[in-house]
Length: 111
Image (cartoon, rainbow, N blue to C red):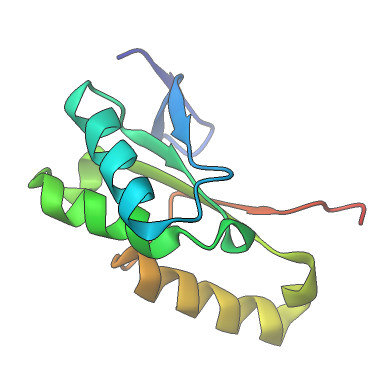
């Protein structure tokens, strides 16, 4: 895997696996597990995809240390604003079964 070093020194894989339109938890967990097996380490999900829990399950079950993954999620538009964003990120952390997210984006920042 090739990586891009970000301005904060974190290395991000240049190729990632996205889980948009895979809302079925079992199917999502299976395809993420398969992606991990073939070498993907950047996994892109979002609150609105409703599959953060499946992504977290696949990562946990992989047996690969969390620091070897780069996890991206997105805050949905109804969660904008400090308090809502904070609460929604706490929920994402719980679903992803991790204590940090590598990249958090605003989903549809222009509405």
